[in-house]
Image 1 (cartoon, rainbow, N blue to C red):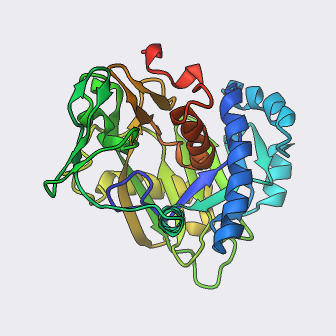
Image 2 (image 1 turned 45 degrees about the vertical axis):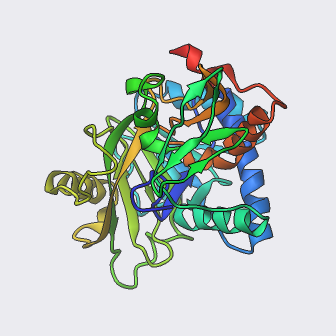
Length: 337
């Protein structure tokens, strides 16, 4: 959960609406089960059920394709006409919204805190954590012999898993090349009017506005403000060196959108901002496969801006794959490229 990681922010959305992608719907359902069990085990509130509201534009094939899959997966949902949605959520201006899809069991995750909880649980169960820069070791005879660490040591193991987010392509350019593309993404937190609870958790759900551009947000929570972001892919960046100061143009666009869709937030001050990155695969699907020349190396990545919610299910899937207990989905294989 460090500041340069794609999972280093305060919060992430979890929702099961995924168009025609049955696998992702099923993975969200499984992830929700694991998130619930994990937060009970760790005694930390990591999953917040606020509901999720999709605001659907004229092109609604994605949302319509989700409905039967949500039903099959046992994910509760409701479809709302704009007048009904406006009655339920009067703080939202529904102009341009054709219909709405509401998932009452969706919400958001405490991303940075959850990363810390996973680390603490891993160490508590006997794992060892080292913080170091890593370079892949030499590959010979169909296997990687070891890793080179920046402190001068080498690390030997029977299996290696590289889950390096936006750095994965740099570590394996001969295998992944440009198949991991890091793009700059800006996130803003605005301060709701004093004493106005309409834009906070309990009154407002997580929301996704799938119009001409996809904006999304999370209600004010944990004293961080009202979160808003544009899902449009930004320019290519180096996650190691990029400056993380938001641009005036992105802030202006976010504020203009917010004041249109949430009129009560007009004039709300910016209280925090984040500049992070997505690590996109060419088709936005995840990557889970063996290194073509090293069968003891597993490559795991391609979160593409939607990976965090799937973390528990993807981790479970990766563990079975590494141990040889189950194959990985073909959708995530390197052969698709």
